[in-house]
Length: 117
Image (cartoon, rainbow, N blue to C red):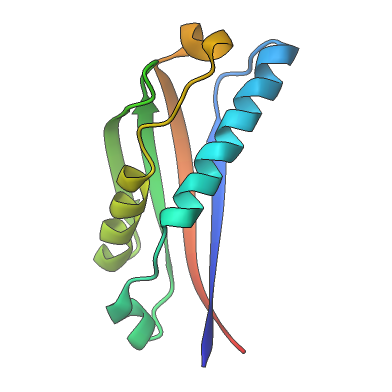
């Protein structure tokens, strides 16, 4: 029996002033959490014990909508799964104090790992 281990990393650029950096980190954590809730391990990859990684670059506009999603992966199974989980995660609510910082680019890495119980 396998336990599904998925690791998500979100990196933001550029750096903001202290207060906005904290708020942007909170928003990034919210995006990470939302994508994590919507993620799934591709069934065919799971059955074949395939692990891999996806890299995504996307833009979020000031209304919280996803734009310009680009995903590359070690395997097409993971590309499709990543696109689905990211698309399901939007739109999001952008806090008023951050709206002038958008549109904003995000870089996301999703690692797909299986671990024996």
